[in-house]
Image 1 (spheres, helix red, strand yellow):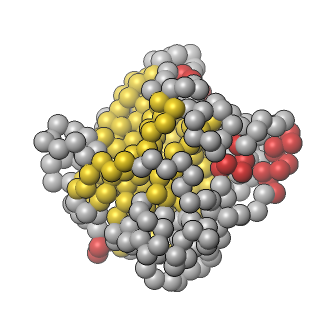
Image 2 (cartoon, rainbow, N blue to C red):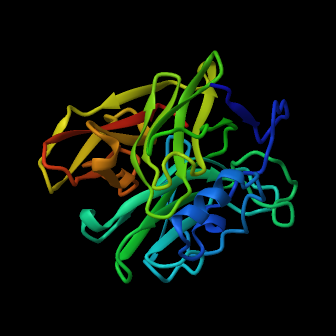
Length: 331
């Protein structure tokens, strides 16, 4: 596996610095799957995206040096995707000389898990026309794309830091199977603080996206048989600059034809910087319908206390769901 280090916002030692492809290029309009396969297999890296097309960010507070932001609108009202797809695109701060850099994010919809799937959760870069000074690091905003029920409330989340991170992207090779997996690793000496997944084709979905020691792992169902555009992301920080810990909740049973949620809590002295969930069993039989930071039972209302995921099991046999949080003393 060869990953590309997309750089750090405060210094430059780029090994390879493409602009990341935008999901809205792929999901605008329904197309035949055979045509989508040919198109997406050859689509090059293109501009990172506009300057936060949705707007409406709401600050949820700060904890441990991390800033937590949300954005809410009804599915179908975002204006950047063809319903029933929609997205939240959350900027960390102003687009000129911003001190903030995105670490992670997520999304949830107030709709049945059976009808809601996650397709994209990833860090994004602003185009040169919007970012000043411009760099190629995807540190400016967080994109979450869902397929759900038009009219139901979609809430996206972003977690941001003033400390620079290393952004690592791995573009997954095409495969012979619709059930695809990938792992992206931080550089030696770095710890993972966030990460995400991208699968391009219509009706494809994320089965699992979660942190592991020194990287991020994803499992996706690809509706064009392994030819769709797919990427894994890791957001990393030097070990000497971060005191991080992975916290996982015990496996939770997901009965056939039902949904279940699992929550990993960081504890009183730590704050969540990222997280995700893993479903067991065949990839094409279950999916994540929500993945997001949450507030716990402490005195404030900042969602810095843990990570919650919801998964749906469409098969006839039970599966297990695990939530995994990245918890830091200071972000």
